[in-house]
Length: 168
Image (cartoon, rainbow, N blue to C red; front, top):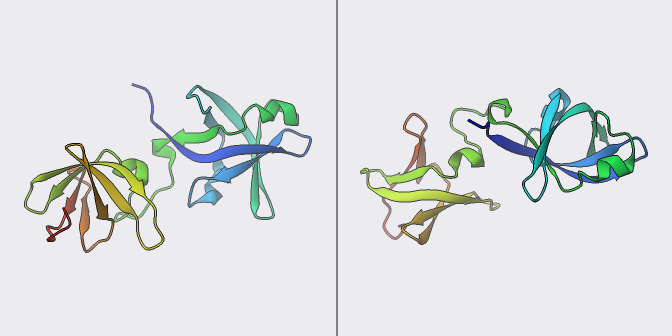
């Protein structure tokens, strides 16, 4: 079985002359980059390769990554717009009451009385709170991701939504 990978950054333009590239963080835990040894980089077309990380460093508020064996801007430039990925088991641990988006997507959603609503197909990020987009037999239902409405049943691998009039 192939391992599942999670994007933690995106390679941007080369930085300097020694093969570094700027890295756009796709994580709330950028300190995790210091522990990277080996990563998978995935191209926009879906092809991927494993690379060893020489180092990651900060330049002011920007992060740069250096891959082993890529020593010029031209060499590292071929990875521009590639996603830097780690295995799912290598993601930064979250508190018990929080989930990553990749954990929520695909999860079944049920009412508190046990009726299947559908499955989460997308999580929209908004300033006030996230919103779960749930496929309900071809119809999209949007459910605010707030604790008063939705609870997570990790053991059963599902979201439980309160039955509020007009919500569904």
